[in-house]
Length: 422
Ligand code: EPZ
Image 1 (cartoon, rainbow, N blue to C red):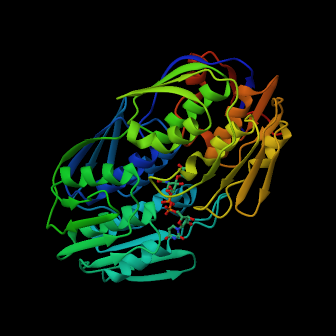
Image 2 (tube, rainbow, N blue to C red):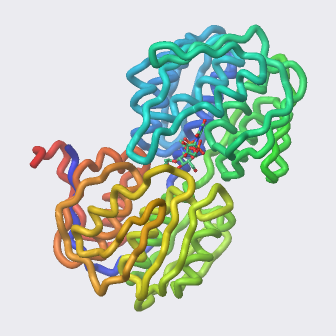
């Protein structure tokens, strides 16, 4: 088990640079499966465990994947396998993003159903419903998805929920479909536009309009392409909140301001002080945040992936804040860990009621998932004394070199990899 130890209470200072977005890199990497005897060159690919898992999955399907720094080159052969490894898919839900491209390119795909995780059951029914509407024959047996389609048919598809993964899978499935596919009520996260850009670079006609509607005209083939992963908006906001919670003075570089508007608007409402430039945001010290109410929503609403980190920040605000989680079924497991540090967070159904306290005290706490781990790190940075965060494996899935980045900002952190379980 990997453990991070933090001696908190130090106001962070300095500059940190955002990594490439995990949630943009994963679908774009899966899209390389659409290529046949071609190459995709991808820049700004973050060094994350989840990226390594996707690379391993693509290699297991026959793709030659080579990394040099933050550039990854994918050489895709004329034929690829269409059965995804159970071990790898079960390890990372985003592996289900190979379903659409494999079905489009091979006419068949076999994939284990992704498991649930600590934030909810996370089915892929919307993915499968859309593929069926496009003419695929989909069967679920013994925990596996068996999908077949001689050639998918383009058509109008309405998503019951603006699912990020379903939008991405159906966009990739539509690339070789007969005719035009119009997907309505799609996710509008920036990662969707990053995928659309890559498909365009491959030679596909994709109109996103940014309004929750994606139009894709099927083609007979695609060609070599190069692309760049957008900055990770969730990682950037996590460091912004680290600056706010420690009363620090930090600059987060490599951001796209439009992608972090929801957080900045809420922080402004709560009385935080920051200045935004075209490629960076600088956080300035303030005494205490004011209470706010938040409801997580699909983009451009307040992101669910920032909910735990924002709750951690609000534990030190004045008054009582409410944070409602509307995207996932249960994303408050970390609250009990925050309360071990002296926070006062009560969960009422799908809402966290956060009564601000004067300060937090270091404790031993456990990360239950990626963003919960990030929230506990933020709390540890602000707390008096030492905090030990166990199960840091979750955090390494989505935060590149987080210990080094925090050290650069003056934090007193250390890692104990493979520590004995208590
Ligand atoms: C993506 O997950 C992100 N992961 C998640 O980030 C993020 O929290 C989520 O989008 C929402 O923004 C990646 O991009 C790799 P959804 P995804 O499909 O695609 C339900 C992180 O911390 N749903 O938009 O799985 C689902 O159960 C991770 O970086 C169905 O019911 O999210 C959930 O309640 C966590 N049926 C809601 O929709 C479906 O077929 C949102 O899911 C699909 C989804």
